[in-house]
Image 1 (cartoon, one colour):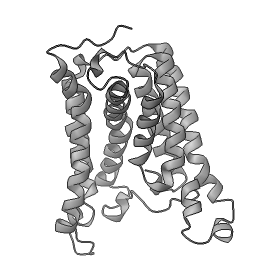
Image 2: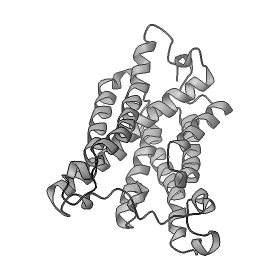
Image 3: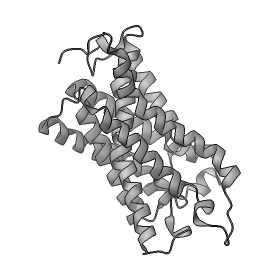
Length: 259
């Protein structure tokens, strides 16, 4: 695949690959300021005060998703059925590795071995993950708002996060680590050890500590897929399948802390 040429279009490419991620991250940071200012965890509080994530995350998903769609033609996706299917299989494998520790936590005497809330258990991902996203805390279970909250949650995780993160981590940052001055001259999937370590470790660092091990393994698999396939579309497919299975597992196993 030819490299993305460096030209006066550099700014346009930067917007397409980095802009959606920047907006997505901006909403995450905004939430940190809004929660102490507007949040009120009280039975008499309005739903939008009790759990700000129930409306900030949908706005985040729609805003970042719109930018992905708006700038989609500037991106070299290199879609193919072959590599999309391989990416889907890689996503299932990667998320299986991510989920394995929490399944082991249900079957092993973790507290007896390491003690309560130990750093060793956290580092290994051995946590039951029973606390996390639960719209039933603010909406009537089974009601329209409850269902919509889950629809938007899956839309955010499976569609928006898959595109936004792969555009940034593999589409931009990998290139930047190969050539700081002219990243857009670097073909997608160009291998360098600096690109691998920086991209994978930073991807790992934006997750919770209990997810570090799973994120490192998953990030490594995604890097390999990017290098072998030279297809950004394949890594998006991998991410989408992984997040879909993560959401299904969170609901099926009653582990809302997974997502």
